[in-house]
Image 1 (tube, rainbow, N blue to C red):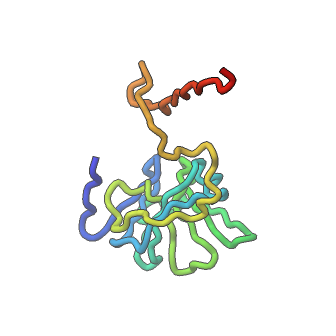
Image 2 (tube, helix red, strand yellow):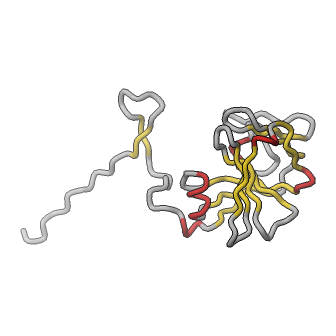
Image 3 (cartoon, helix red, strand yellow):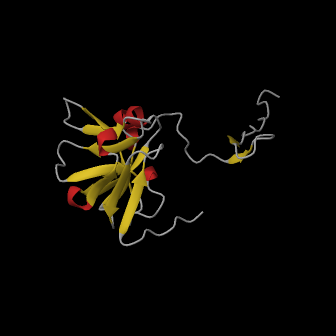
Length: 159
C-alpha cells in the first residue's frame, strides 16, 4: 500500500492509544535505521527507523501531559514515551540540542524523507530478518515463514 500524502506541508504522528499527537513541518531533515543495542532495548525490536526534525519544526498538538521522559545520565540522551500506552515518541540525543528524532512508524503519511542511512549496523542481532526467502505458513493467513533450504547430498568421496 502506498502511503498517502500529508496535507498542508505537515505530517501528524500518533501514539498507539491516540492520547499523544505530534506534528512536523515537511520535509523532515533526514531518516535512518538505528540498529544500536540501546535502541533495540528501548524500542523492543531489532532496529528502529527514525526521522530527524528541527525542534522549531516539531510540535506536540495533543497529550503533552501524558508524555513521560527518561534521561540517560551517561549519554545525555532523553527518550520520551506515552505514559498511557508506552509508545516511544521522542528521542533527543545529548549532542543534538536543536533536533528531535521521532519513530517513523508514528506517521501514516509521508514525512518528506526516505530512510537511507544505517546507524550501528554492526550491532544488528543475529536473529534479525536479513532478507531470507519467505513463503506463506499453511493455515495461518498473513504469516510468512523462512523457506527451508534443502541441502544437496554430496557424493561420498570414499566410494
